[in-house]
Image (cartoon, rainbow over all chains, first blue to last red; front, side, top):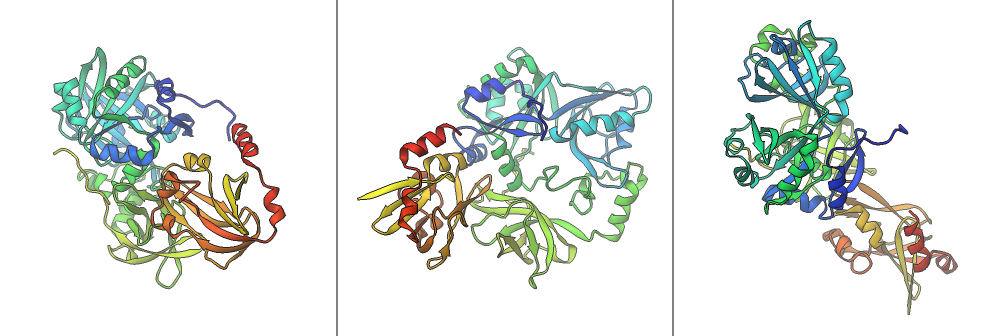
Length: 368
Length: 124
């Protein structure tokens, strides 16, 4: 372990004031939960609105006349045709056709793209992007900005009170708005399966802005624990667990992130290996897994087939508070990846019965 | 007349006659958070002191529960298996994990008493 002190987000003092239990995550001191606890925070997000501090994530912009073309060299997504003030989920690739990171890319117009990458990967992603940029394109990190996520069915009512323009955004659209005097970049997106907003705000205004959100009757703070259980129920990948630099997007079930045009050009980093796996079919696939009992199966739990042979691994798993039962995802051979296939999960030496199940485990509640 | 002792693994042990009732402390349930699953040892099993014999899982993580002393398991608490949240609600009462017949009564006396455990937690 590194001896260097943990980095903090602009909301560090607020988390401590709210009684958060702070843990290390990706080199940051982050709230894993508040006094209400993960279960209550999770359920409140599904019932009303939760506020998450995700300021540890990497925000950056890429600008220059051919920024979209330059980024397309590194990701399989359709970036050139991304409309102004729209965003898209895509993947940074390795030259081996595996996933360097997953990220959001927004077109801010005026030849400017806005990127949000994982905290644990920003130290790798940004140098990687910078090293591949042609002359005239610049990458600017926005370490001076905080990122808040307001998630849940009541997020819209809250945002309506703060900014009519932001509240009117469709899913995966963005707007620059002034809220309480703070210059905000708001997107209609999130990582919980619920409707909601992610708001990039100058670090110096972050605490005041967070306090304004927490003052709304619908809103309660939620930590990284609830964020993880929410995204698991929503079937969303966590980089480092469910996808990493050994995972091809095809076996991860992320073929949908490859743009139609990109599948004719095959000109992104690692495209050859992705094309080959798409053509040959993956040997293994990421699937949802529902244990039959109450025992959760965590990441790194081995998966066995009906004969007891070890055939795969759980990559994320736990208890789904909204599901009221354990749920997991992991990789299994393609011939055992169809819904309903019986598997065993090797938990503490016991083979627990489970079955392959469709994801999301809890229906997405995105706005149309 | 019952006495309660504590372990460094944050278990409490309450002696009723020659049967010890074992659970996890308030400090432990608070640190774990919402308990969603408890895996208990079977009655009749002989256990060594410090042996991992039960598991308690919160939303976030799994933790081992150890045999506080050597002996034989006489009963597991089906109520916490059926309703794991009982561990959070009543850690030192109805949320007990198992009962055991102690191999050595003197070993019980050697565990921490309430004052010693309170001091132990305060120094964590």
